[in-house]
Amino acid sequence: MEVRSMNVSLFLEQHASHNPDRVALYFNDRSWSYGEVHEIVCRLADGLRNLGVQRGDRVAVMLPNWPEFHFCTHATWALGAVEVPVNVMFREEETAYILGNAEAVVVFASSQGAEIIQRVRDRLPHLKAVVTVGAGDVPGAIHFAGLLARGDVNYRVQDLHPDALAVIAYTSGTTGFPKGAMISHYNMIVSMQALRDYLDLTDRDNIMQPLPCFHSNASLIGIIFAWYLGSSAILVERIEARDFARTVEITRPSFFACVPTVLYDIVHMPEAADFSSVRYVVFGAAPTPPELRRRIEQRFGLKMLQSYGMTESPNAYTLDPIDRPIKHAAVGLPLPHLSFKIVDGDDRTLPIGEVGEICAGPQTSGSYAGLYKPMLGYWKNPQATEEALKGGYLHTGDLGRLDEDGFVHVVDRKKDMIIRGGNNIFPAELERALQEDPRVLECAVVGVPHDRLGEVPKAFIRLRPEASASDLEFMDLIERRLARYKRLEAVEFVEEFPRNALGKILKRTLRAQEVEKYQARTVG
Image 1 (cartoon, rainbow, N blue to C red):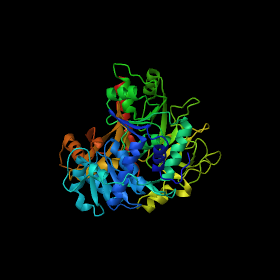
Image 2 (image 1 turned 180 degrees about the vertical axis):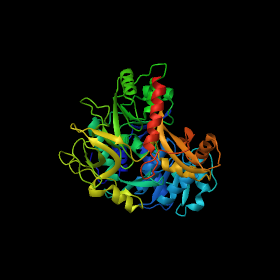
Image 3 (image 1 turned 60 degrees about the vertical axis):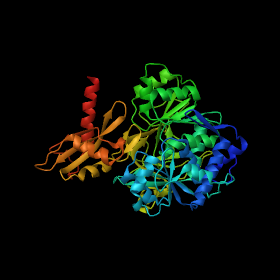
Image 4 (image 1 turned 90 degrees about the vertical axis):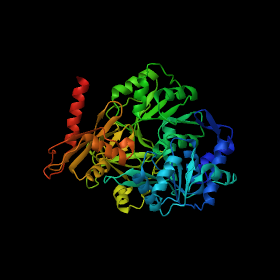
């Protein structure tokens, strides 16, 4: 399909022109055609223009898995503005930081989210309007229906430079403060093209998205990907095993990505589920036991593909091969537009088999040669940008190696990040919150194994002399301060920490001890 520019929303416009009656989206018991979706997007884009939103302005979307999330996202792009997805589980501090750092001028939110935003609005000088979606009115906010009604259906999607900024996707940094990864329209389109070719997907393949829309990569392998292909998308509002299985049976998707937690729940359902339409399931947002993978493939007759990626990717960097044996210890092969190298601390390329930092760059041969570009950088963070993009390669911060067959092996994840059922948790953020309690002398948060969620955070706390506290006090502190998925699973008080020669706490030792305990329990 010819595109006249790199605006992702042009694909939606062209599909609406060529096939307006094709179902673009299924959600619960409703459906929208491409013509209907495009009309909504045009009206919203014009409504945003009437609010004073200009090309390059940031528009935040803080919504659950509702169709409006993608209507608002595509309207933002149609206007030439920049989408900022915000986790709906965030509370005041997290929300204020992201909206303030991005200098968002408009936010789309549920009434619950709008109330959170209004409580911190005095800290957001750039914010012009809060638009509420769904039931409930919030003082000082505009309602979605009103904005939609005032928009012009004849609004045209704007032509943009290929490197125009499309998304600022926030990912926690090693200090615990989020960094905004800047993703261009070009980044997204090339990554979707590579995924399409790798899996041989077409507009005849229904694409399901059960993952949260506020995870930008989830949408790039979900709804946005479906609308790029011109296929029908299925949006899942909430992931509950029986409802999810029923949706698969009714809508017959060919492909979806999900966290292993969902499949764990489905495979343990007493009744059978019909997944015969599903060709591929992509997973990789949490550690997955090979035995669980084998059980799922055998029970449902589908092919599971391990992936590796990050917010900065965008989309997946690797997938398991579909035409040759996989390696359970690896995270797959690079997608066709990518090549990988492993570097040492001086950024020198290491030979096959040696462990170093994983770096992603352009493919040097074939039809995809030179097409890959890394993200544009980190929003308002030139130092982090320079460190991440040395030599035109994205430096992931993950340690790994390449084997003789081209498979990528991740040895250690980025710093100390915990992946709880697909949600990224950076221990530094929890540690900062714990250390605000005057009774805490030192603390360390690590990920410990969990049957269903992969891993969960556990805090080790050394109290000040004469201080006393209960584990529930600190668990409650984290639950009150941060998003619910960041809550502590356990707290253990210690007299001393294992340390290296420089006195630094050895988190790997704490993790290893917890793994031993877990293995002893599960084996026993």
